[in-house]
Length: 64
Image (cartoon, rainbow, N blue to C red; front, side, top):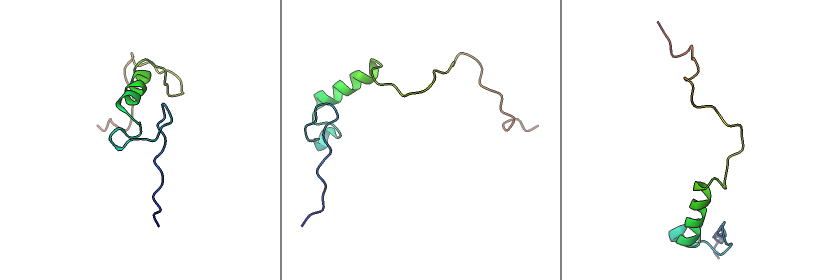
């Protein structure tokens, strides 16, 4: 008897994932997911950081 788990469903359409496109079921679903990331439909929660200024001063890097 095998203890192998069934593959997780595709996060886009819910069909079984295909090994060649894992975790997706097809190239189309992989492209849909990429498009969502590139169009900012997926975001990581948190505050926006101002990256325009100089880096913060770190006393640990200065050893004179």
